Length: 149
Image (tube, rainbow, N blue to C red; front, side, top):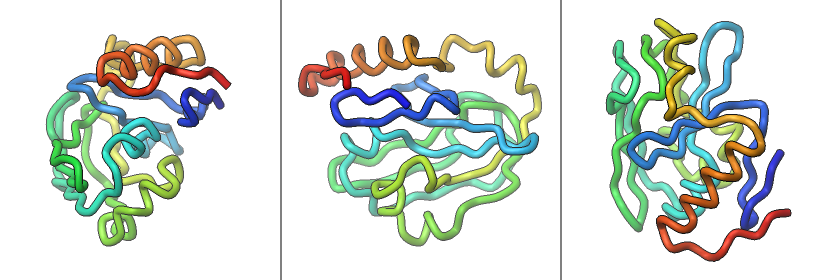
């Protein structure tokens, strides 16, 4: 686990950053669980609505959307594949993502070409990669100065 500005980032998963996304992905028995990271949940405020399109998709394609008091945004898929499960508990109560972003997964995808997708420059992993990315996001969005813990 790495902590930056009181935001936590587990090192047991990868993160998708294209389109300014803050999406985590974690492999669970050949299926990828996907959710929102703590940077997104901290900066978006309390989530009020999440929608997911249950279909086949390509990496970087909008898979749904989410809303908070601060903004409305699209939710992009970090990999190509087929949606196999949607977490209805989270869709019915999106604040669960704010309360526990790394256990409140949103969607599970059966990957189509995982090795290729994970080679994308838009996938970040490891302590150093995450630290560089999040610190640059803090600067880009003019958040408080990063404090390494």
